[in-house]
Length: 496
Image (cartoon, rainbow, N blue to C red):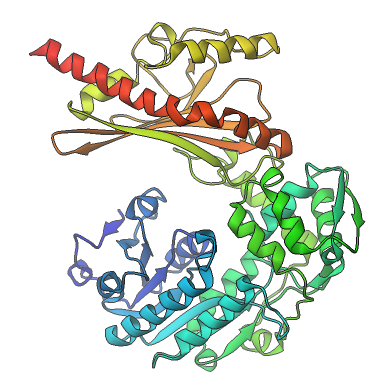
């Protein structure tokens, strides 16, 4: 079982192994590093994020879970208590403007709190940083490492460029571009070079670094075994996905900053992150990693092998009990459906117990319909039917009971946790894959109902479809949550 250290003191577990903290465990690298550290069994692993619920959804058996925020220094003490090694894996690119200043402030707070807690080593993942680089993304990574080193705790900083693996922002931007654009008009950055590193190789460096005394107080570059242009990387990625590579037309007048503005229509990677990455592509990146390879030797995957491994990893981890970012089954097992999802949702509180609300939720669809705005649902279903889709496939196996695999109108039950969560896969004809999740949690004397729609678009058309539906999303899912609450409260009154 995962332990919530907000309620269970770390010292009460009886486990005498040293504690390793993964700070930023819900992020891309953290969510891949935690399972790897757990499997080694060398230390107790404490996973930390700003939101505990995100960590609880990971299913990390044996991990201690704690919520903390580096921008709120008062929260750091409990997370760092008893920690020997702390991985610092947070950044603020998603915060938009001035994220660099937030990164520096967070690092300052963390370095101070780590020193006060007696941490023996901080391992920080930064980025390759050419001296000529001026983009805020690159500069802030460099300054974050400097700020951590201002404290007395020895810091090992590993620097990486493009990481090749499912969920890597740079990898996902390239995937969305090459699998959906037959022709690309690009700025000159397409001819810049970089040494992309496979996710597995980077995780190996991160795992081994604290155990190598010579890495303490060092800045170590990491990279793959080859230097490639971005154009060549995109060509290889398309080939490994079984797609014809796009025609790439570089033009001298299109700057990375200018090209970043249309990313909203091409990729589902959060726009602020994608823009920060693209604006950093003016440079050629060099990894001076001879010392890294000497201290932590391993076989490095070339880019083609790394892409192939990434696609294989998606297929091997296809099944999921509930929606999680990038889960392959919720992308209809399609490598060309975006890893990152667009989301919309609504919430309400019902003055009714969870079991009563659950009985309402499991009656969704069929004759009971969708609790609110049913004419809109009807219009959408008819439109799908007119396009040759299953929109008018009304009905369900049982009027009130559900099981995984059941069809509910044109939806399929893909996840079911009785009394807690229902996950439905969208079955209509659309350019992408959708999931509707209804989540219940006790709140006071009632039940919090969260209704969330996750949409994995298929390129430009999938994104345009999402934006076209956005006005309806503003109220449909809130209306659904409120409708469920009303029906549950009516059932309570009827039973008294």
